[in-house]
Image 1 (cartoon, one colour):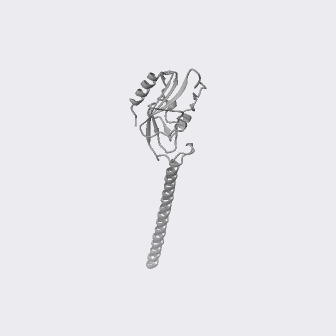
Image 2 (cartoon, one colour):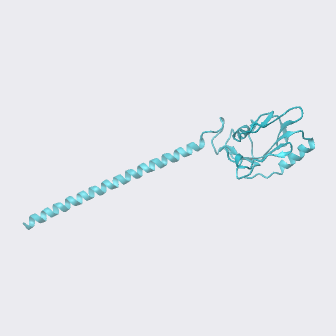
Image 3 (cartoon, one colour):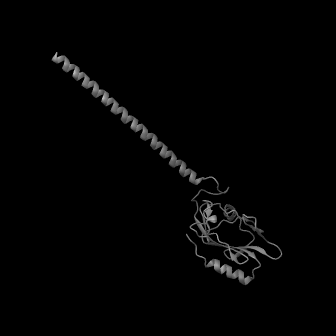
Length: 198
């Protein structure tokens, strides 16, 4: 009987070892499968994030990919001689494509090609065309017999800025009122001395 019992024990041990080995292999294969699925999900998520960054919704129609350009321009808006302040939170980073940031209201940051100043003002809920500067509350400053809306880019007067795409170190002046040529020169000098915050 001793041999038979030994043989049965050996068979039990072999069965246990093979079952245990099979269970270990199964657990290892499951772990590898789970890690592979996680890697695929992470990879796909990274791919979606990168492509979404380039084609994120909500941008202007003709805009290039985010990051296709990074330009800075100085902006000065004077209404009846008062400087309009874009540094308040209501005007900070309203679009990824073009915005003011860092509590600065004087430097425009543009992050894609094909983005014009009209789009910037649209994101700020400010209507702007060649005749009127319109606030979100409906207050309008439109050219008439007494007061004119004027635009200057790099010291040169232009009829409109809504379709203008800024380039690095541009200087943009928007005036509304009845300024004398001397006052306009003073505002242009103020704009030229305005530091760009990069």
